[in-house]
Each structure stands twice: as structure tokens, then as C-alpha cells.
Image 1 (cartoon, rainbow, N blue to C red):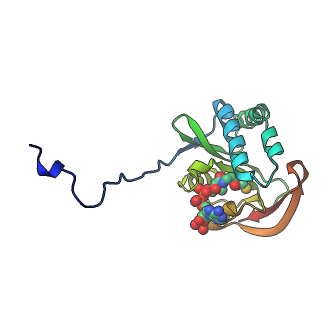
Image 2 (image 1 turned 90 degrees about the vertical axis):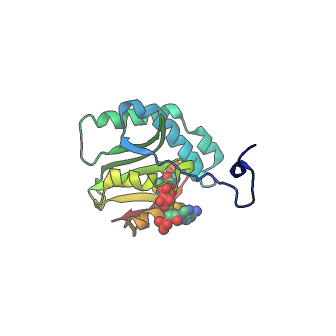
Image 3 (image 1 turned 90 degrees about the horizontal axis):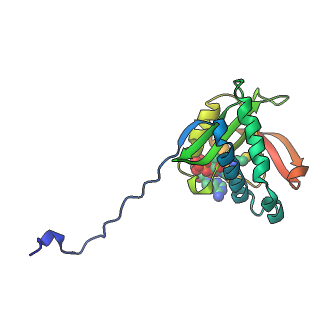
Amino acid sequence: MAPEAELPGPGPPAIAEARVPVPLIRPAQPRDAVPLATMHIQAWRETFAGVLSDAYLQSLSVEDRVRMWHRALHATTQPVPERIHVVAVCGEDVVGFAATRPGGEGPRPLELWGIYLLRAWQGSGAGQNLLDAAIGDRPCFLWTGRANLRAHSFYRRNGFRSDGAQQVIPEWEGMEVFRMVR
Ligand SMILES: CC(C)(COP(=O)(O)OP(=O)(O)OC[C@H]1O[C@@H](n2cnc3c(N)ncnc32)[C@H](O)[C@@H]1OP(=O)(O)O)[C@@H](O)C(=O)NCCC(=O)NCCS
């Protein structure tokens, strides 16, 4: 006869604790260009649905993005301290990235030109880990879309504030962006 402890009894059902793995952050390498390009486009489609037209989002070309990432990642073979590319990876999958470049005429010597995490990984802590790996606590600026409220909260939490600069990007269907600085 089975011991009593194995019989189903009253009491709360056992619920397995849900654990979200936090992706690993590492420097991007030239071999990441293709998965980065694919992930970058998926992140654009998730982030800008309803902001950019479906036609625009569908027209994004993986080949163009691969070329862009090849250029960016090969440029890092001659290191420039302001050019940082880090990826968030889960096993073999690239699920996010953060990238910086010299600030040019901008208000700080460093610009965060992109930080993107696939929606499934947002809220996991990987966004913060990407930002920390890319810019640490350095002074920096970035441009962000007006409608991108989640990103604004994230940047504010990290000390960024609007400095009043804004522009319209014609090649992004006239998207309005504004600058945040810390
Ligand atoms: C920006 C990004 C990297 C942040 O990473 P994340 O994992 O989402 O960040 P967190 O969950 O730690 O923080 C998000 C903040 O937004 C808040 N938030 C969540 N959903 C929100 C929503 N729908 N509207 C407004 N704020 C929201 C969270 O509460 C948190 O704010 P808090 O720090 O005051 O608590 C990530 O959201 C992302 O990749 N988004 C898509 C791409 C993108 O927009 N990139 C920026 C382009 S400028």
C-alpha cells in the first residue's frame, strides 16, 4: 500500500517557482552580425508597431542591417573607447544589445545610439545590465522617440533628463525624437 504522504490531499497545489534566466552580457563580436541584425529588426517591429507604419516595418532589410553591423563590429578592431557594442545572449540567441559612439557635436563626449532588448526579455534585468556594460556611470546622451514611454522611465531611473533638444527624423516617417542627457 502506498504511504499516505503520496496520496493527494487538501492544501495548496504545488506551483513550480517561475525563474526567468537573466541573459549573459558580453562584448559583441564580428560573428554576431547576422543574429544581431535579425534581433535588431524584430526589436524595431515590436517597439515601433503603431508608431511606424506596417509597410515601413515590413520593409526593413536583414541584409542592410547585416552590412551595418559588419561595419560597426569590424570598426571595433581598432578600439575607440567611445565605441562599445555589447550583446545580451541566451544560449546561442542574441536577445539584446547596447551600442555607443563618440558624441561628436553633442552635449557629452559619448552617445548611447542604441539599446534594444526583445520584448520577451524586458523586465528581466538584462536592459540594466546592458546599459551598465556599455556606459557604466559615464556622462552620456541619447535620442529617444516621443512615444517610447517605457524607455523614458528606464533612462530617467538611470539619471537621464531631457535637455530640451528635439528633432524630426524624415527617414523614419517623421518620427519625433528628443534628447536625454546625464
Ligand atoms: C529600454 C529597455 C532596454 C529597458 O529595459 P527593460 O528591461 O524594459 O527595463 P526595466 O524593466 O528595468 O525598466 C523599465 C521601466 O519602465 C517602466 N515601464 C514598464 N512598462 C511601461 C510602460 N508600458 N510605460 C511606461 N513605463 C513602463 C518600468 O516600471 C520601469 O520603470 P521604473 O524603473 O521606474 O520601475 C527595453 O525596454 C527595450 O529594449 N525596449 C525596446 C527598445 C527600445 O525602446 N529601446 C530604446 C530606444 S530609444
